[in-house]
Length: 200
Length: 200
Image 1: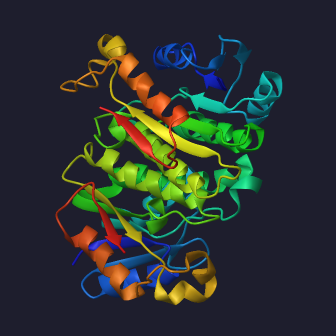
Image 2: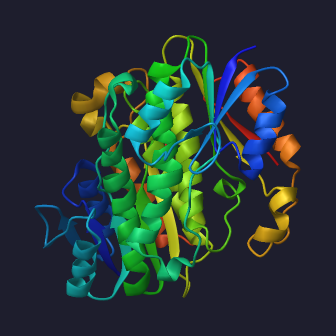
Image 3: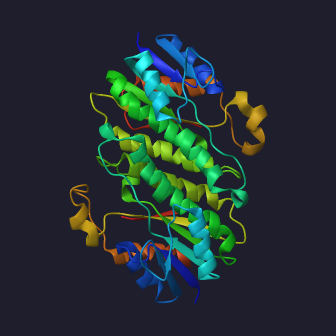
């Protein structure tokens, strides 16, 4: 049994990850407004404080981060920065801190999304950010020390969120959160590094 | 003959692009401190001002933008932001403005790099940014109005830069700038949209 910190643990994906990993690990949750600890991933000082509070952990999973969805033609610099500052830089902040805080042999698991490779209208920001995250894991994996690993889960539209996001994802096959959660387990419990596991 | 803006025209790759496109087109050179017009791509107001001065064009090529090179273990959030603000958001700023100033059927060509798929030590910021730039063109391509197209060129290290960057890239085959410049021509003068042309 290892200790896993799940950031975004109360989200749709996060709660499925907590359930899956909770079968064999001690899980600590963190979130912006819920969970065992509070964190704003966009602020690296807040991320540092989280790891200081959480104590020694073996693995960290991030299923959090905001994006901007809207037509490219009207997209502003500020709107585009939403995804860069939150889902991209927020997850990078966690990885930058975690590489020093995790126990030897631990892992970092980040979250991208299906549109990274299947672009949709209104998703220029999300496609950019999700590709950036997958790139980050490839780049970071060759430099992590102490046997640490880093991977990404790329989930498709979830069955549990299908109704909410239907208008964006017409024609996409939704997948159950429990299936997506297995991809996170593959990152945490597996041996690879620098990979993106697609759950679609 | 088309009117093409080249941002970063005095750089190593930029000069090759100007030479190649100049064979058949009117090329307007732009740089931070050199060229016919000056721009700071990181600043959306500066990008907007550039297009107001230059007016309608048929093609926009960007071969500019900084990324941070350094060890992951020592990387700060501020250092990581360099690439996000400059090479990524800078090129996005140009694309967001260009979609309004391009003539029908015009094109936008951005620059990523081979590190997106071939990570090296000290290169995590560039790997992230390059993957995100390639993602951006895929995402933006599906929303381009008026027959506009957007692509990226992903060059590996060019022969002309071996003296400066060679030690980061041991073992990788380099390419002449002349060959990289052909990929920009393919993007500007071709018919495809949302593609990344790899020069490696």
